[in-house]
Length: 245
Image (cartoon, rainbow, N blue to C red; front, side, top):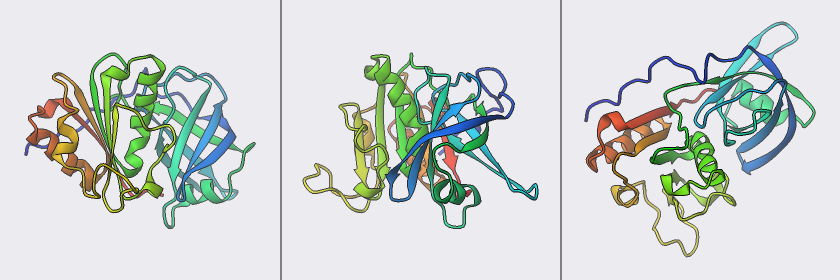
């Protein structure tokens, strides 16, 4: 297949804001290895569904580590963001966030960043996520539901098992399908298997932009499925997650 074009360097709306401090007001487990952190921003910061923020940690000796995390919340409240962070083995930032951070702590953040992988809520969109790749797509789904435009979106998410599914209580709806690749829950309509063309075919809408997010392997496989179903390559936008800690 033809490679999906690389995203152009862009930010939006406008350039990323300077670094600011954000206060952790709440946190909770999404899965045994993923937590969502609710952050109250120091100053109002508009963002778009699909954008991300950088979290920077600074040690007493001046050493710094930073990682990018997609925003899970829908746009609309410029004073707070939710970041869902997977705990990675040996991860400097994810390990600190999971093991040390508690409500009341402050974190240094910068954003929003990204102008390619964004959805403004007014055009048809097919969202395809693998594992933690669901996070920016959840921002899009939440935006659609909050504005009464769920008719514009279809979401397919692939996860290994029910224990790996983010936002499990909020996710279900007529616009969502979940493909379990290794272990399906009891009574599931679909046997455990990797995401297939049949999982996506019913979701296709002419003129929809397709947003694919996940690991490099998942993103490649999902993009191939979409192209095989006749989706034009320019209509596919891909964001790949790598194993950064």
